[in-house]
Amino acid sequence: MDTDTLLLETEESMQKASDFVNQEMASIRTGKASPALVENINVHVEAYGSAMPLKQIALISTPEPRLLTVQPHDPTTMPDVERALKESRLGITPASDGRLIRLPIPELSEERRKDLVKVIRDMAEQGRVRVRASRKDAMDSLKAALKSSDITEDSFHDMESEVQTLTDKYVKSIDEHLAAKEEDVMTV
Image 1: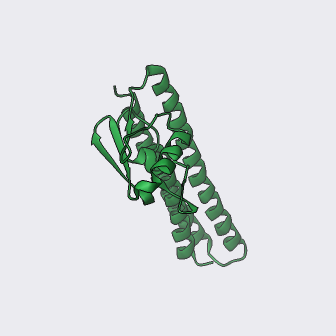
Image 2: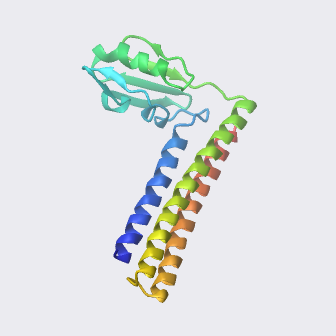
Image 3: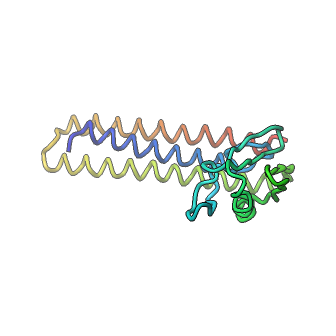
């Protein structure tokens, strides 16, 4: 296997793990309104005979710091959108006026904030595990290439160093995002 290809695939895998964690963390409610709270919910809206992500069939906005609004592009999908929001794990009751759905974001209690920090830390650890798994896969490939004499021992050590640098970079990225999200959750 080409070592450049191996590095690119490893970095891509680590980048995906980091991006996934960042998206998951964005869906955690912090007491502030953010379209990411509902854009990435795992409930798809049943509309037009198929399941569709909410952001494809509605405009999501934050007119106030503690309010989200969801406005379906097609008013006939309003009941489906409202049902999807009620079934989501947001814990927010939608209020509809027939053409616009309002989602008021309540204040978080101190206990709930601490619980959310635990959830965020678990998400970050899962991301770190994925990054380390990518590192392990790359190292296994390098060891196999060394054993079959496809690369020299010097090349092996150079590549090992590069893979470790990538690992450190993406673990640091996850840790920085974790710290920012923790601060966001704990700030009143």
